[in-house]
Image (cartoon, rainbow, N blue to C red; front, side, top):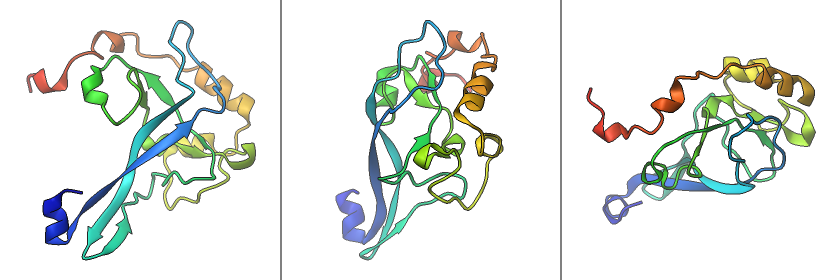
Length: 157
């Protein structure tokens, strides 16, 4: 939060998450492995005259200490300066709404959510082997890598 926001008594407080990769369920051959740990930004809080209110979206888990999650990462070619503070260079979370709670190794058990995404609904209740088979059967867009390194600030709109 900036000093101006503190002086005005309102603003947004950011939140950094540190994670550990416990297991990789599937990886495309030839892709550099996901790091065993990293940091990313998570939803933070609204600060209003001394009161913090969590910024929560119905479909996105808060990602709390003590819970396990199934998180899908995608290998990307994005200039490191554009990823600063968000994800390890070369990796990005596919979409926050695809994160599935996985406490005690059970997909769908853990942090309760007030909404549901189609991806999460499809994965909840599946076994580890079923998720591995489902993700392994996906067909990546073979044209995407050619455009992944384009700096969006230089794109013509």
